[in-house]
Image (cartoon, rainbow, N blue to C red; front, side, top):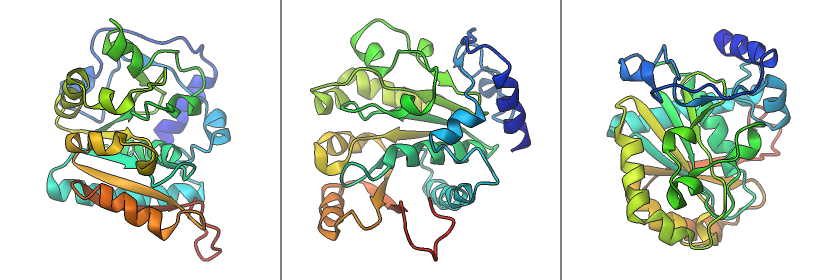
Length: 267
């Protein structure tokens, strides 16, 4: 945690210009997730204050909510390791449950484990939002890769947090489910999942009941995690979402926005 704080402190005194080079994860390619040198992936440090203002709490070990994400991280890692999985879709039954912010905080918490790296991919192609939580991220995203000639390495971002890389979204897609099952997307997902043996890939997907995107993409991930909102998500909505995800391994649910005073550490 101290190393993350130091990196964020340095970032406040530096310009926000991306740093580019040769290989997206050179350190990892040399077999050490603990000491990664980003040479082709753009490094765009985000200040601790900006992250705090955007409710990205997992970087601050003193924040009680960070403890809840550590518990979630441990549970997720145990299930992934037990099944030798490395890809996880994060969704919710309906919109507004906080799935994107949960995906971001979980990704950061996972990245603090020194035995692996984490790639967070924004695949909510209808409403890409991951980039909005990280100020100053350049305006390119996965849509530019899928629809244009933009190389993937020019889109990947390290936000100044060790072992975390973000593949942001950009333009929205009207034909999102067809895009998610297209040959170019399938090839990309396989590349992201298999390029590095110690990488965990998180996919932020749309709400299950809002469209057929999650069902279309389900065959390409190992498991899924559902985020539900306290006092809002209905039992019938959760039941229907689980029915639609019958063909995928659902690890469990995350209770978000809890108002129970007995759960002071939950965000």
